[in-house]
Image (cartoon, rainbow, N blue to C red; front, side):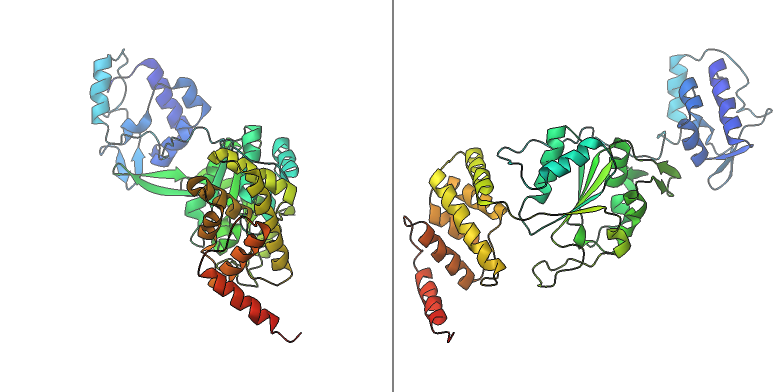
Length: 398
């Protein structure tokens, strides 16, 4: 093969980079990432991967001076000749990395979102671009994940969200080889991608993880990670940080409400400098949220919004006092508002959204709402359940 002067220069630079008469595919990958190759940029060393140059599995030699493959003849190669040579190349890829279509990962603004609680604290940490992992814990449906998403949306910061399960492992987080168009390529995982981009990494439901999550130890220390499968070191870009959300504090669920949550390694938890406890919002704040949802779904009823949050607040107080085993989350209020926008009936919307509870709890919740909102009635069939429960409670001897 005849090469130009610059191509010869690039080939010699590759030989000097390797420092021997033998090389591997990995050497080619490393060389193509060097400044020298990017400066020359005229030679793709993959043409050396021929049967004539192969010594052993994965090991090749540079052509000798007497070889017909030696690039000794120097002249300008025509475009047609380059095309014909490209067809002869047996390895059509220039690296082992799989490309991604993800270019911009800034969350969209959520219409009706109301900032509250730790929103300002989370915003200050993300805005500072200082690596400072956060652990946000609280009961389900109180807006932990949404708060992080909307903070990133407000600051125009890229965010990578990973939903953790007990099956999540290093291959899912850091990356692994995938079969693409009949070829095996390495695909960077969401953690490595967030580090490269300097994005916010959101580990959602972290307390569902197994001990395989320990692969993130160096990440939580703010250090880079070495990906041994492709012999590559990834250093976190400025602005990268980690935020984890969970319903527990990583100690498991004593009451069984969050079944599937696990006890996380103490060394892992210790790498989160701060833990933020997220409660349900105050009535005034939650009313703004409900009205925002109503505006989003196109059916605003201020009176219904007020009664909904009052109803939810009473149920939560009863839950904390141990009087009931279930509660109404802010997320469930949003579900009710959406059902109300569809059906236009307050009690039907509430009934459909509390059907997930057992009959006694469901009847109690509906009965309580009928007392908060005198304009509605408990559906037929549930009145008897509610009355029977009231009579049973009245017969308790204390």
